[in-house]
Length: 386
Image 1 (cartoon, rainbow, N blue to C red):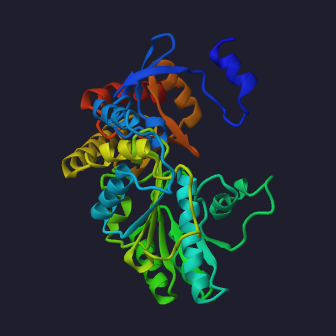
Image 2: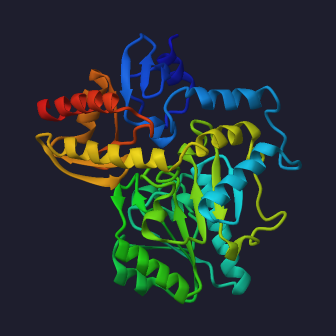
Image 3: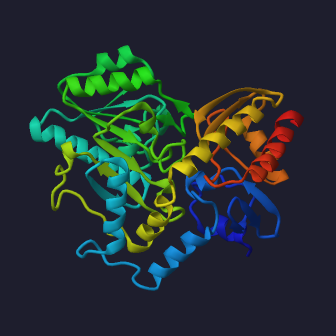
């Protein structure tokens, strides 16, 4: 049996895979099992921060692999401690909990907010999230996700979530009460269609959290780690969250989630209240140190400039009606079907994604102008010829 046949026979059918078997790559260039070349505008859904097999990342991971692959959290390891220090110093947050994924990072954020509230009042356990949001696929993070399509099949779902319309300040104000322990949102709703929140709504959330002693919980799983042109997207709004979750691009391709807590809640989780066997794994932490140490202002400035360059060129494509998002997290509205554009791009050697009815672009942060131009030419052809 070939790879596709084995996949069909032995792997649970939860993914609608595309007809592509990736084999190897370098940076923003990938190759399939037959040697066909592809430009990567997807980064494994915003995971491969510096593309495939980045040499510095490979060395950091390999060096750690040759020293110690796992220790458990009964013991100290240097990569874990160094990474926590780097995250806190770069963000101004005070403490970090490490896990393995975005969903786990959000579970920790939810538990932290709930514990903050119930420590004050057993009834202070409501978390407000936004309609059209996406926070993960565990039962509780699905419950936090404000999309009815995800609230089937796995009942009963975790209670205690209230959903309000994104960017509706009056709806948010109306949902607030002394029972609310947290307001949780993505700065840009990624899976929901690359939809940014407005500065007015974010400011309202900040004011309501202060008024009702609720925590501001920002889900930066997809928007974080340089993706939007700043280290974390909330920085672009002058926001000071109480809890921030992140994952995806943090470790450059290895499974790692992080939940960061501000000084206000740095001691909210105590021994025995939470844990993770693999959280802060030395290899994943070493990979993250390599990634995070290189997301500096020079790189972020390049991301912002290249984003502007891409937007300008994309808006000139016949059939494109609008672009949403920030940095290297872009959603393209077209007159054509997004899934058909994806298939045409795939056939012609470009990997893109979709989000709702949009074509979604999440290229590696270090993609070159030449690679951008090649990829956009394929995208242009796909949109204009369908």
